[in-house]
Each structure stands twice: as C-alpha cells, then as structure tokens.
Length: 206
Image (cartoon, rainbow, N blue to C red):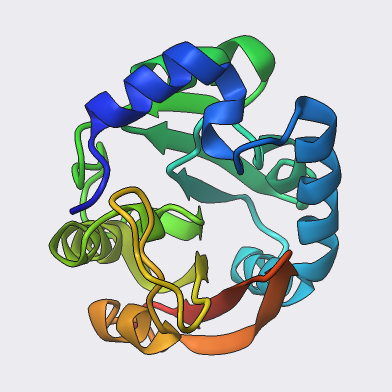
C-alpha cells in the first residue's frame, strides 16, 4: 500500500510544509537538512550541469511539495525550474513561497508535457512513498516526457533491513534501476540521515 493524494492533502492540512519531512522536524531543522543534502548531491548536480551544456534547459521537480528544492535548482546556470505535485495544498504553498518558477497540480503519474519535452527530472524521496505498481507507473510517465539524452536525478530511501510502512517503502536501488529501464541509472553515492540511508542514482535517457 502506498500514499494517495488524499493522504498528502490531509497531512498538509495538519502540518503545513512540514508534511514532507521527517516527523519532529521544525522549519529550521528542515532548512539545515536540505542544505546538508544539497552539499552532498554534487554528483547529481553535475548531471544537471552536463545536460545544460551552457544552454537553457528545463528541469522538472517531480513531487515538488512546497518547492523545497526550488531555491537550489534555480541556482544552476541556465536551469528553468518546473515543479509538479499531487497535493494541491502544497502546490499553492509553493507558488506563495517562490516568486520564480512554475508549479502545477497533477493527477498521479500524469504529467502535462508531450513526449520528450523535458531535459532533466529531479526526483528526491518521492517514489519511496508509492507502492511498487504506482512507482512503476510514475517511472513510465517520467521516461515518456524525458527526451533522449535527458538526465534523471533520483534519490530514494534504500535502508536495508527495515520493514516498510503504508507511507514509506524501503527498497533496494536495484528496484529503481529496473523500473527506469530506459535510463542507464548508476549509483552515485549515499546520504545518511540518522540510521537511514538514501541512495543517489543518476543516468541518461536512452
């Protein structure tokens, strides 16, 4: 079982922007953790810089929430940010918090782009909240909109020996390589948060 849009709407109604981070965090904690993660994401940031090649390119933040990664991705030269999320309440918060960038509310696994329109996708701790079938549908939709040669930057919780819960699934990196069969995904390192491990994967759409 995975999460639904209704789950996130209810969670956002109770917790606001903290709905998308670990229980017990406040906004200062969230900023510090996000800064720390960004500093460790150099391999993923390099993939985005490569796909840009000194020219304007679009980067899709899949599961953007309140726009947590918008200030960081917008710093990358030539990047044009677009965020999408299934939670309408969080999308409205993203629009209010971020003056630049475009944010869209979407239905699950349904992106408002034609085939091959997107130059890069950034997807951080999103698919881990979906069951296997829903994660595979999202992966298929992401691959549909990525142009050949586009970059996929993925980070998911891969902590071994933890039992999955209804709202989070602990899966090995091999699962994500399998569902993104049209992207040559490589493991680029890990990020530790407490006892949990998140694996960074990056690759190019074939």
